[in-house]
Structures are given as structure tokens and as C-alpha cells.
Image 1 (cartoon, rainbow, N blue to C red):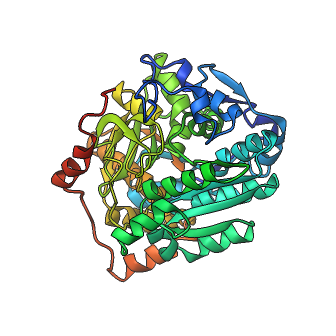
Image 2 (cartoon, rainbow, N blue to C red):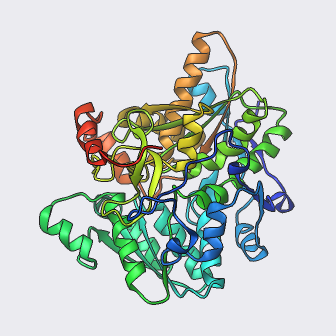
Length: 454
């Protein structure tokens, strides 16, 4: 058997439409609420933050939304992305399961994030916006949006979670190479940043803080809007090119997956690989869909389904989501893209409807299987991606114990070439596991007392 089986689609097979799961959910997602009135948010309330063309996608329940031609032209730089069967990893695990992965690390920015960065930059450009602000955790989103804004002639300022800014200096250089300005968050550039630094000068930062800074900047600056790399409905929508392509490629392979897996922070790459298969499941297909998160940031497995803010300073609408509380500041683990306190409302609804399962894995297990992957398959995975790989290994082991041979598909969401400091710490024994204590979660969620219930 070949050492690796690769399935590549022709450029003509790039999806021409995004799939909107809101058309098929058995229970519609509860509406976001205005933070002042606690009434369902209106489109006009979001206009200071997003252009109307993206707001329309956010609230749409049309099943298919056409991808504009200028976006198609940019996506064609690397799409369709290849799908591989990980034959050597199967051998390393000693499993009879067939493991397939959709390689999103082939994009110019090295991850799945450009799938939404490019359309967001395009829609802001045609709406007359000149400048964007955003946050980034590990730097994958900031890098992707830096590339996308350069493609469409927009300025960009990135607020990068402080611990990642320090751990991953080359991410900042990538963003600057594409013309963006990147600062550590919390920063002295915003009122919320200055306030937090005064109170907590040694804070590692959080995505909630960085989002607050980016939104404050967008609202207070001329011709500027905010851009987000996960959580929102239109981001999940844009990412479905992953699963739609994978369905075609798995069909060519003569397989339908028994299990579909994705790592989960806010939920973007998971939604991308999973939502087309959730649609299949809603319509009668037998498939298990598994989201995997860090034990250090367990919004799915230990958080609660509540209305909460998407940022620390409560500038966003209240969203119905699995959350650890908007004040949550995570442990400084290396999977920076999975440190978010909340889960995309659409993914939260899928979880509530029991159309998917949730699990968590610890940091050392992730690096163990990430190294095994690199030494068998060649590609070095991002710390976020290693969570999906660890979950795949666990599922394969479980199948072996049950005497079953299963077909497993997962999203290889990005490469780890900008994250080698984490591997160095793993090899030198400096990494430890962290399980967020139940008491800490209770304390964080106590701040939501009195908020409306979904």
C-alpha cells in the first residue's frame, strides 16, 4: 500500500456556495440580545461593528449562499485543499481504522482561517470600509486577515493575546509582512486595555480582552469595522467549504466516515468540517460528530449553555452559547487558538440538540500524538490541530478495543511551523497538564447571575 493516499479535486470543484446550517436545524438558534435592552438584537444595532452585507449573512436562514467571484478567485490560490489517508499514522497507532484528514495547512497563511478572512475583507471593501480591527489568539486568524486585507487594499490593526504575542514572535512578523500592525493585548492603545493593565499588570491576556480592544477601536475610528475569526454565524458559514469538499473527496475514496472530528475553540474549523455532515445526520445519515477541546478551557464539557457576552468589557451582544464566563482568563497553554471562553452559538445549538459530542484532552497527550503525527505523516501540526489528532487516536484505540474497523475523518486545521517553541518546551519537559477546577468555573459563571436564559 502507498505510504500516503492523496485525493485532490480540480479547481472547478471548489464549492460555489456556502452551506448555511440555520436552514436545517431542528431547533432554531435563540437570538442574540441587545446588551442594554435585553431585547433581540436588530440589524441596525450591529452596523457600527460590521458592514450590512455580513450582517445579512449573520441572520440569513437560506440554505445556500453564493460565493462572490472575487472571493472565488482568491480561494483558488490553494483550494480545493487535499484530503489524505494517514496510512503511516495508522501504522504508528497499530490500528485497522482508516484515518482521513482534510489538510487546511496548505493555505498561504498556514491554516483554515483564510476561508473566512478573504470574504470578510471583500465584503468590507465593497461596503466602502477602509480599515479593519481584529483580535487573534495563537496568531492564525491575525495572519490570515493580514493577508486578506492586503489582497483587497484595507488597513488592519491586530490585538494579539499577550501570552501568544510573547510565545509566537514570528506570527507578529507574518502580520507585519502582510502590512498589518500587531500589538499585544491588553495594550495601552485602548481605554479597556489601559484599565486592565492598571488592575492586572502581569495578565497573560485573553481573547475576551482582545475582542474588547478591537471593538472599541472599530467603534471609535473613522471608516473602520471589526472582523472576527470564529464564533459568528457568517464565519461558520464561510468555513463550510472544508466539509463540502471533504464530502466529494470521501466519495472518491469510496468511504463515508463513521466519525468526524474537529478541534474546538470558538468553533470555526469544527463548523467547517462538521456542519455539512451535521446536515447529513439531521436527514438520517449515521455518523458520529465529535468536537474536542483542551482540559484547560472546557467550554463544551464543563461550561454552561447561557446568554453571555463575547468579550470581557461587555461590548458585544449577549449570545446563547456554552460558556465559562466572559471574565475567564485561561491558563497560558500553547494552543492559543483554543483559549476562548465561549462556543459559537450555532455549534452550541448543535451540541444542545445532541447532534454532536464533546470531549476534552490534556496538553501532554496532544503533544505526544502531535509528535507521533510529525514522525509518521511528515507534517508538523499546530498545537490546536494536535487536539483533533489526540481525539482521533483515542477513537481508534476505542474501536480496536471493540473489535471494530472505523473510518475517521478530521480537519487538520493548520501547520505548527510558527509554534515550534511549544514543541521545544514539550521535549525539555517544561509543559504540564492543567484541568480547570470546577470551583474556578463556578466563580466565573457567577458573574452571569440574573442574565436571561436561552
